[in-house]
Length: 128
Image (cartoon, rainbow, N blue to C red; front, side, top):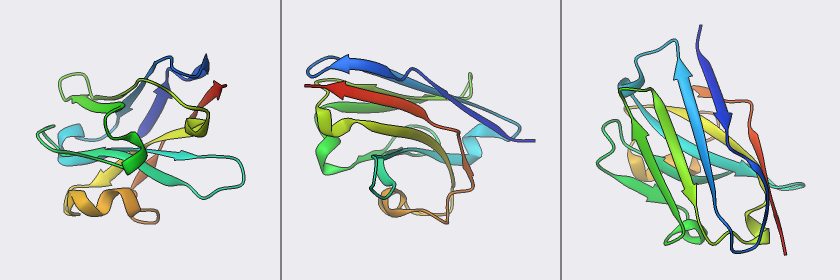
């Protein structure tokens, strides 16, 4: 049975940082690309960042470039998202996503139905 568990969300002020972590069990972690998605109230879920199986390439949505960094540790089956200079518009539920490896990295951020497993989400709230 596959488990995807996020942690690290919280309430912060604009300009502060948070680090999200996701631990995956029940599958061969480095067989998959990984991604972070978010959903703000009243909006569709959107891709924030994705990373290849061995962590050599990443992709970011435009609003995250220069502020967020995705990384993974295949020995620990974890993927992290370091979020700096947070803005109120970053507020939302952040979800960890397990992405089948055969998809190209540049399609990851647009995925929805293709995601193989989702975590339960961790809430990020940024106050102004």
